[in-house]
Length: 208
Image (cartoon, rainbow, N blue to C red; front, side, top):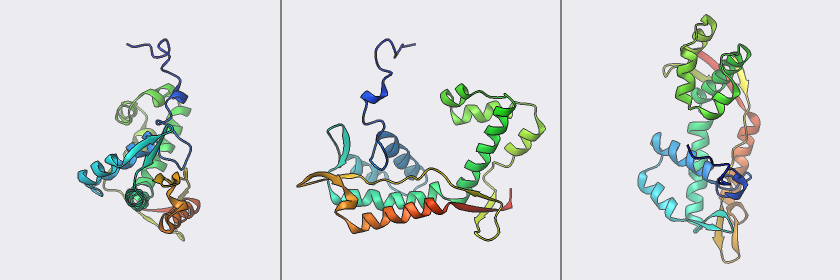
């Protein structure tokens, strides 16, 4: 195994493309957005390729080379929030999984290192192998056929999460600037998403 620390590769601050403060683009945000949208069928491979072709790096930051492609990202990111991040089943699953993990850690079934270094599938498999009736009953509620809905009046749980917005830098004659500073549609989209995350999700369980 390669010792990344001895090679001086463990200082992630050196790799500015990996992480950037919100709402700038970074490798992580681009990766989960494109991967999820492609897997869910909301964008095509050709669209992904076109977007990647329009990406460049200036002063250690991702910059989109055209306003048109930056708008493509903004429009599809709004769809991503609606269809993926705030989709009721996904919100329910995230809430339920957080409850399960909290219980498992209280019972010392898992340690924080497992969460840091293992995959989702491995963690689920580990939990499924534990002989605890309460744990197995809760795990059984995570399946594709659950039925939940957004209901602000009658709800079983309310969840707010990390505000996830993007305001990509776009290349202009003045240099790289946030798309929201030159495009009203982008500005309004970002404001709309900020409000959605601020409101949170009121989820009613129909059946699990």
